[in-house]
Image (tube, rainbow, N blue to C red; front, side):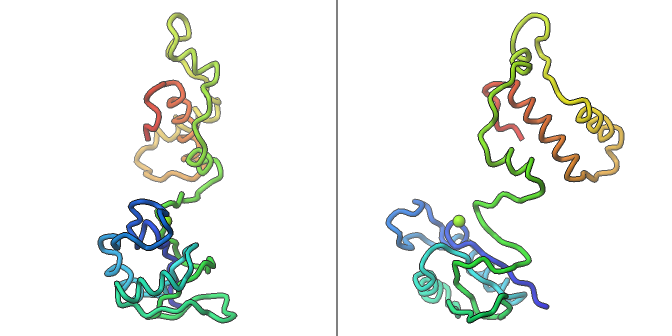
Length: 186
Ligand SMILES: [Mg+2]
């Protein structure tokens, strides 16, 4: 079975330098976008996933990039046609989705850390920036520390599980919250 790729339009194919602006497709193609699409279409079935009117996007892609396209799939649950771009607002099953706004999902914990604003600093983290006893200290769960110590002992493994990454992200969040003005360190 050939692979299917779902490609976002704005910000990935259309440069979208001014955001939505007046709703037209006003900008240039992203560098490499047309060549990239043509190449992907040789390897698999490609659909453009967009909230725009498919006709608007299809006409632009046809005129500017010479693509053959359709906005109709009939009743099929899958898009598996090679050499023809499908323009759709439906999210078809795909091997991968290419999107400039994507957050790669590995766990809810990591996803929320990425999506939500940083949590307000807990009292323990306040101690990290205060002076006097307790300065420079943050409170972290013992199990997290244990995991970190194990990872530190076996650095040669070079392999982190999703749980390991979640622990690292938690500790990172603690450190971030304990270091005002240095948020966003990743
Ligand atoms: Mg986009």
